[in-house]
Image (cartoon, rainbow, N blue to C red):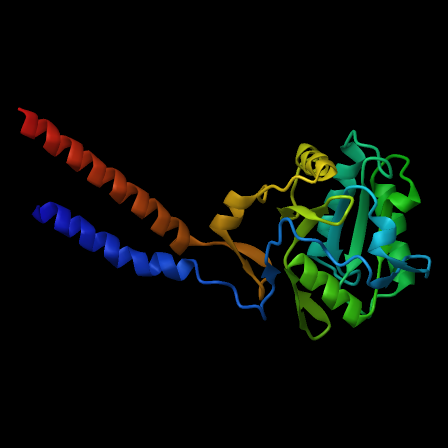
Amino acid sequence: MRRSVIILFVILSILPCRLYAFDAQSPSEAGIEEKLGQYIPLNEPFIDERGNTITLKEIINKPAIIAPVYYKCSSICPTLLSNLADVLGRMKLLPGKDYVAVSLSFDETDTPELAASKKRNYIKATGKPFPAEAWMFLTGNADSIKKTMDGMGYRYKRSKSDFAHPVTLIITSPEGKIVRYINGSGFLPFELALAVSEASDGRTGGTINRVLQYCFTYDAAKKRYVFNLLKVFGTVSIVFIIAFIFYLTRSGRKRGDK
């Protein structure tokens, strides 16, 4: 009995830390608020790399891979787009037929000329013939950007000429329904192909990297994900204690049977 009381005390002492680890992220901070099953705004005007006004509704008529980035970024955005180009080049799915890709800038100062330059580089990086209309590079005004990013649950924060922002791909159905988020700049062809396949059916799914997302927290200041020791340690501790209590209970029952 005394041993069980001690164990219960340990659990109660850990729970505050565990609950703290689950605190919701402030809406003013950079991060992702997953909106699986919801529809992104499709009627906001954007400018494509040729300088033409266009809406996402005109582009998204098949599964879409949306990469929120800004074209002046010199760190993680180029990494995300380079990895995306590499994966698109290795996927067996046909661009323009099975899916479309959209790079969407959340920096209203980005220009169509800069978008066109980025598009040439990244389409070339796919290493295969790639229809120009299958990967659009868009810019827009602050109002259209905010409404669209809010609709996708994508939060970013300007810091002078730079941004703190999450790194993710957002996969939608042909109707613009969000079916999956793929977090981080590292992903494999089969992951993206699976997400696109699900999107074609309109099925929703949890984040592919949910385990990594659980163990890592986005540090807006350092612009990277950091290992959340408190959260992981708290979880492991609780699992261990529950298993230990189960062991003591079973052991006590066996001794009582004797």
